[in-house]
Every structure is written in structure tokens, then in C-alpha cells.
Length: 393
Image (cartoon, rainbow, N blue to C red; front, side, top):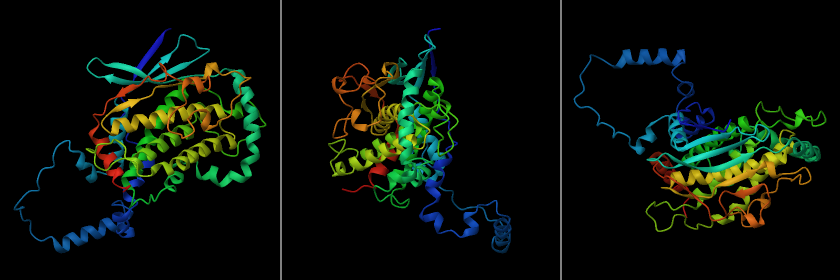
């Protein structure tokens, strides 16, 4: 068989449970009483509301005027909707231009492409991320890293357990991100996390890499091993996607018509902390015994690229550097550990050029190659500038 292409219109995913807390955990809802917060399914509240209406409503009186119609398809209406509804709308816009292509020509070396639509009229699609699976001998050799990292488990237990639900609490600690102060930034990061989770699971399924526990009874993970493939690491993908978006929105101009796409608001002082946190979250999954270092390498490449895709979609369009994780080029003799500076320049601003990069991390088409990403995403555009306004100069 040759390549099989599956174009994914996955924006219907409205089940995003981890986003549901974003809107109703803050100021307005906190002002409601405990019975009201429990919802209208409370028998006590329902009966009390019936009795209250009976006591005050009186005879029916037709309204003297009707409320003004809402503008159709107006981004500003998002503020009226429930958080999970907003979440599904954001993710639909993010997923609308993405698809996947699986190379089934060589079952022994599976490879998968994440594609992005660059010309909708012609339905032209261009690879944004390509990944291939390392061979069995490489994973066996990687067990040495997993075994060695286990020495850190006692020191990092609290971190590892707190990070089981994802990176948001640790990224939020880098800025003043209380829900009532950074509501829209938190929603932007949650939408990014949902996108990363959807895309990474496609790669995990196709590449079908086994977990460390399946190779050796000596690994004995300190947490339950997740029930899906190892590569790319989901924690690494989500952490680096969210870190990339967080740094960008902290640096973004509030005025979308401003002369610079990104203003320098001394956000560079946050960059080492933001990306250092993402790196540590990824490494902790190896400490816990559920991931190989290569899983985090692949996840970092995918996550940073997805983060840049989110930025381009939300800010009117832009160019994103397409990247490749060449797992088939890793040898057992290489046996790389995960270190962010093996992938990024020292200032953490960009991937290393191909000439200075590891053989498993390469751009697609050369150092100057870019993929143009469409920016016609009005809901993401609205969300982006609401979030940017939460980070004054």
C-alpha cells in the first residue's frame, strides 16, 4: 500500500472537560450562593424558584419591547456563551485546516505527516510536522536512561503527581494568572492544550510505540502507565505548545493594528522560566518511568510547532517553520537524552539550523522553508487580543 490520506475535520470536539472550569470558577460565579452554584438540578433550589415565582409573578403581561437581536456570527457573542461552548468553537477553528497522512508503504518504519491547508480553493496541503518511529534496538537502549532517572523519583514525587493533569498550574505560576485576572489567557492555553492532545493522539496511534514498562520489569513506574502509545510524549507536546503560546501572548501588542506584530514588553525575562518549566515537566515523565527521552524530544518538536501554528491562526496568519522528527535516523549508539538546547538555539527563540542540529531533528525543506498558515479565524483572533490585553506593558 502507498500513502493513505485522512483529512480531519475534528473541530466538533466539544467534550473538553478540562476547559469547563475556566469561566465559572471565577468572580461572577463565586458571588452566587452555594445552592445556585450546585445547578438547577438541585431539588431544593428548583422548588424554591417555583414558590418564588408563584409569589411574585402576577397576571401575564405581554412585553412592551423585545430585546435587540444579537449580531449573527459575531465574535463578541463569545462572552455570552458557556465556557465549554467557547472551547469547542476555538478548537474547531484550530483543527479546520489540519489533516493527517499515513505512510503505509513500509510497515516496519511507520511514518505520519501533519498537514495544513495552505490554499483552500485548490485544497493544497503542506506538511507541517513529519514523524517516523525509532527502531526496537533504540528503545531497548533508551531503558538505561529510564532506569537512571528513577533515582530522582523521591525528590520529584510531588511535582510528578501534580502534573498528571497537565502543565497549566505550573505555567500559571510563572505569571499572575488567577482566573479573574487572566481568564482569556487561560482559555487560550486550554484550547492550545486540547489541540495538542488531539494531534498527539493521532501520532501516538499511528506510530504505536511501546512504553518502557513493556520492555523491562525493572522499570516499575511510580504512576499508572497511560493506555496509549509512548511517542510523542503528550506531556511534552502540551507543555511546549502552551509554553510557546504563553510567551507569545505575553509579548503581544494589545492593539491588533499596531506597527509590530509582537512588542517587546520585557517578556524575554520570562522565556527561560517558561521553557525551562516545559522541559522539566517533560523530563519528569521519564523520571516517573512512563516515557523514554526520545518521546520528549518528539513531543517538544511537535509542541513548539503546534504552538506557532496557534499563534499564526490567532493573529491574522503567518509563516511557521515545518519540522521533522526522524526517529528512523536514531541509532542505539546515539541513545540521546532529552535536552532542550539540543533542539533550540541558546536564546530559546528558534530551532537550531540543520547544520548544528541533531540528525533526528530537521526542518522540512531546509532552514529557510516556511509554511504559510491561514489567519481567517475570527474567534481565535478575538480570543488572542482579549488575552493580550491581560498583559499590560
